[in-house]
Length: 84
Image (cartoon, rainbow, N blue to C red; front, side):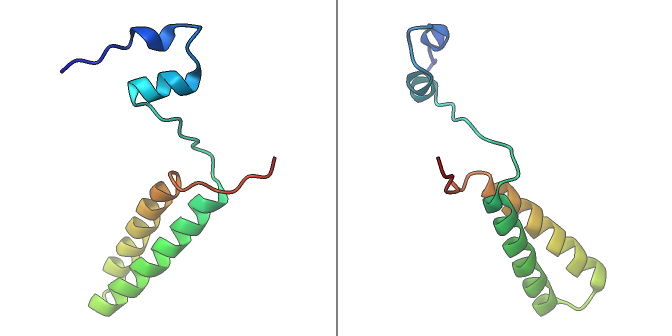
């Protein structure tokens, strides 16, 4: 199964139409409040789960960092209300 991307460079096709046809989505890599909230929530969750599982500080620290980073990446895809 091949995908035809010839219409994605057509100036008469809007950006929204081209994205719909090619399956591409625009991602804003800015640090929005949703990234910060999701990252902090993930770090707290990682800390709680790691402390529940073990008391070894390096493992707790690594788990907290990993959960925070992965949750922050998830936060990139969470829409945030932006006033006009």
